[in-house]
Length: 404
Image (tube, rainbow, N blue to C red; front, side):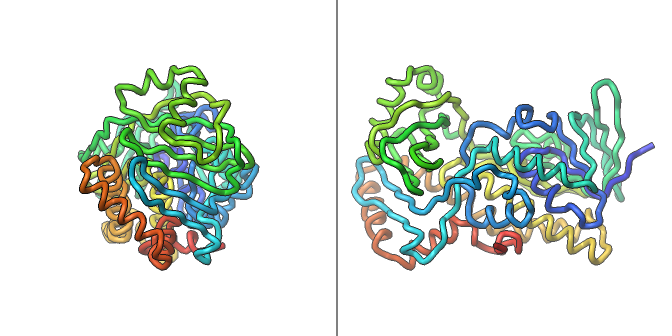
């Protein structure tokens, strides 16, 4: 006999868990299916990355009751400096001077994951199926049948709406025959932490180089998150460097904007690619997060974009429940696609265009790029507009993102 649900979310990572929490108490029967155990140490997306959370994302996490479970509420980002090695011109964004609160905050993915798990424990109406592996999907006109393996046993689940939140290599997306547009940047990001000689005091840095960007993110006092981008073919060698050699390479690429750096943590390379699903929906199915689009970490929009997917879908579903409408209807899915299109297209194109623009070493382009940086730094209204977009206030912003 099949177990009946209105909504089944496949993938309990950062975005899938956020959607499940957003739907708590809405009246729909919701199931969260996750391959990993519900523990921080078991969930691969709760890793050592430091997430730059946009202000709108923090607003939403506060409204969802997640932020209260974080230990230190994140380190605020109050100033951002953007530069390009070899070019003149620097863009300096200062929240106070632009009449804005902090642009956002930096929080380790593992800590956000832990906060999400604590909040999920409070969701008593939610059915959590983990650890479990989705092994088969069968579509019908009025429902989707799922075969889920838990250890040696099989569990059969019916749902009126299936949500694929199962990451870049999405099983759900593949089953529905949805192709992807893949761009391999031939780069890897090495993620770690360092100690800075000078306290960052809320300052974040994005430094572009011929070899890719370097980012330094505040974590409080003299601790900082570091993202060093290198050619993929060189990633293993750089990851294996001793601390002295690694820091020397960082200083060569980044300079001494925060004084001398020291005590780097464990380095782990992440291959960088853009993967865009050709469609976001199919019969009674919607994609969110990395299953819908995986973007270059430049500009720190990955999780923020995925969270906006989850918030938009949750608002449409809550509205549907209030009307006693079908959560998997073609009308609702079409509205989801329409609502997400401007933000998704603008964000994914911006990150890709920026990678290509900043990596181009053509002398004429370098001159134009430098002039553009210098001009932008002098135009306060334009800087404020850029900052607001980076804070997640773009397009059709969810009410949770606006709330404070």
